[in-house]
Image 1: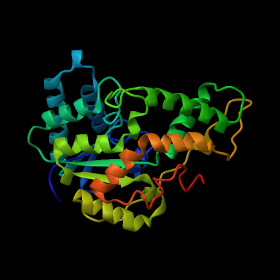
Image 2: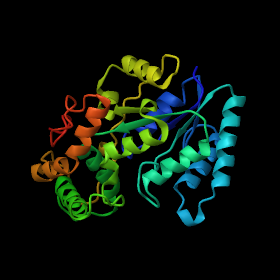
Image 3: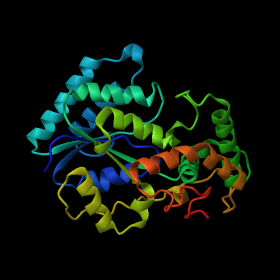
Image 4: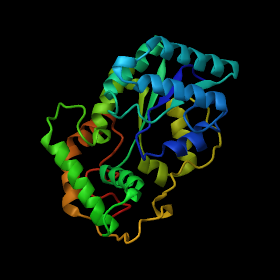
Length: 288
């Protein structure tokens, strides 16, 4: 077993809970520190570290963050395991930018090695899933896809009218190459692993687990399936709202156009084959 921390800064709706609950929680070589899964002590430490790393600059307590990180390593060492910090929020620009969060993480880890795991998802599919998580709070009485198109249209207008250098621009979670670059600069390109969510959902699970263990420096053991569970069908939709299968091709094309350079640059830098997975098509395979 290799030493060092594994950090999973989970993008929203990219299988974070599946990885936490079905992979990290059950692997015998690691101890998971996250917000909602695992032991009470590990959850409390995960919450402390996350709160420190994402706090506004005016209240950031680096010494408190260092103490929480030291406690995490002590707890993992006492259990004879390698720590895994898996928290959403490290890749968003909520409160502060992701560059600052990555820099804080690098600083509080001091010279300790770390492996970063980034899971990404087709831009339209990711945006659609985020939307359906939120729209239960009261969209107008029209079809779900029409509401989705309206919501994405607003988000795209915000993105398209802001300066490209503005890190607080809307839809920041789709800037895959920028996020990869930030963590590569902080931890080294060789220490940043990128996994498309589609490979978690479609590939042979035994092969997927084996490859992920290899890339993270973990022993290859039999683990539960990490296939993400699509919860869209589980949600109770507001009265008067129905879902249809039609997609707004204009919105999907604009979304791809806005983030095409991010996809192409990441694919060129990592060689993970995003084009073959349909990332350069407006609509992902599972929705087309």
